[in-house]
Picture 1: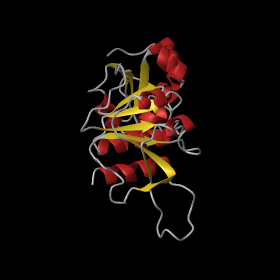
Picture 2: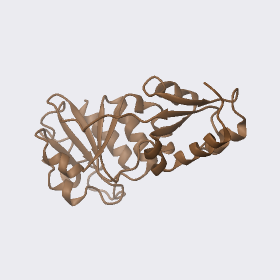
Picture 3: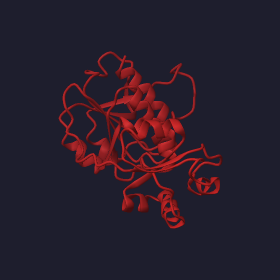
Picture 4: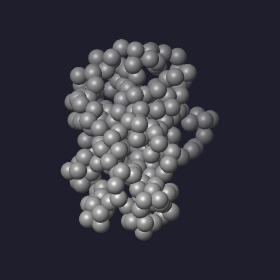
Length: 236
């Protein structure tokens, strides 16, 4: 692994922008744990450590206030076309989830609960942005993230489609989830929930009830927390 030139460093600084991540087919990961997980799954292009790179150069590439020692530049994967949902497999779909921290936490949570494919609307946050990669803590090595026209993809799904809606059925009701092993769980935008086009194709509306049900509370859960609660119920 050779040392990087100043021109290469300038080019890699651009990886903080999605346009250049797409153009170069590369992304950045920071920290020994995250890099250790990802380098076994993706092609390692550059590895910058305190032993081979001046600290000031690592700080230029880092997205953190306090860089975590090492930075890796890896090649983005080609997962091919979005999967066709199969019986006996649970999938997660994200409709316009915008916050990088939420997306990273959702990917990490999906990994914990054995979800191997996440299908995202085209305008969901980029899973290869530095903040998302950092929040996944290496889970991108095991979870494939796809981007597509989500409503169109869902319209062709023959398995149950579970959508989180305020007027949905409680996830704790008997029969609310007819098959915990199969289907697609769709989570919506932080502020607006599911888009109208996605809402139309949901076959099983679900909600997480507050407790106690007759007392006032905040209007909604954070989407990453809600995803964890719902996946836990599906895996129960």
